[in-house]
Image (cartoon, rainbow, N blue to C red; front, side, top):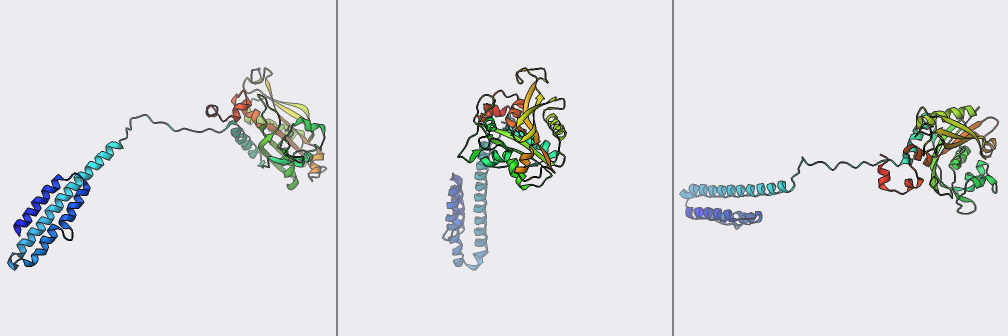
Amino acid sequence: MLNKIRDLVEKTKIELDKIIDLSDLNEIRVKIFGKTGELTNLSKGMRDVPVEDKPKIGAALNEARKSIEEKIKTIEEKFEAAILAKKLEKEKVDITQPSKGIEMGALHPISSVIDKLTDICVSMGFSVVEGPEVESDYYNFEAMNIPKNHPSRDMQDSFFIDENIVLRSQTSAVQAREMEVRKPPFKIVCPGKTYRNESDSTHSPIFHQFEGLVVDENVSMADLKSMLTIMMRRLFGQDTEIRFRPSFFPFTEPSIEVDVSCPNCHGKGCSTCKGTGMLELLGAGIVNPKVLEINGIDSKKYSGFAFGFGLDRTAMILNSISNIRYMYRNDIRFLKQMK
Ligand code: PHE
């Protein structure tokens, strides 16, 4: 019996030395320690061993089991170490290599102007409101004192969907909607997309406006001028010169247009301002009492001012962009320059 045990240990160790794969190890394990494994069978033979030999044989069996298990364990560890070493080699990271860097996005110039203007206006107490881009003729024109067939409709060459539905040609439509539901006093601004049938280097059929409306008691042209001056200086710089010129809009009376000194050349004259030193920026005026009345506001008690400017033009000025189309082409090279 002792010889059999010794032979088994010896034979098994030789087999173990030969294995080249972890799965072979399992096979040997079963062959030795399994239910009908070779060592298990030897242990079963204990029954027939004379009592006086039992301790010796038992100890030998234990010893055999221990030494085989130890050998298996060492081999297992060797394999695992080899696998780990291979993995480490494969996944090696050279920390001295320069990094690829993180690609940072940038806000579109128009979004960035909307953000800046919104911040300025919110700090002055305005609420921000929005409205639909597909608008009824009523809100876009009639509620703004531009009746059907009125010549001033020609100022805005509009896209009609049918006789009564239009792609809004001005964000003023939002003001009509708000006047209907708000009670004065209120101060609102509405940024948004607008549509007109015009296209050249400074006009696009889709463009953006930013319109403001204040309705309260005793609102005057002086309030409008001082508020616009503060806004323009915060947007273009404190040294910006502001020029107010008389103008005409059906919804404001009196109406003005506002120019600012060119932030590029500070009024000296350059290509941005076509040598004039000034840039035309927005339309504004005292809300025509007729507009207040159409929209259910008592024009004897309340007055208001409104202003509206082209965000595309503002973005072009702030970023020295020469053609409006660059802003709608989605060209990554252009957008990257906006960082
Ligand atoms: N809605 C006018 C336009 O698009 C701009 C404007 C707004 C003028 C508010 C006066 C007051 O031309």
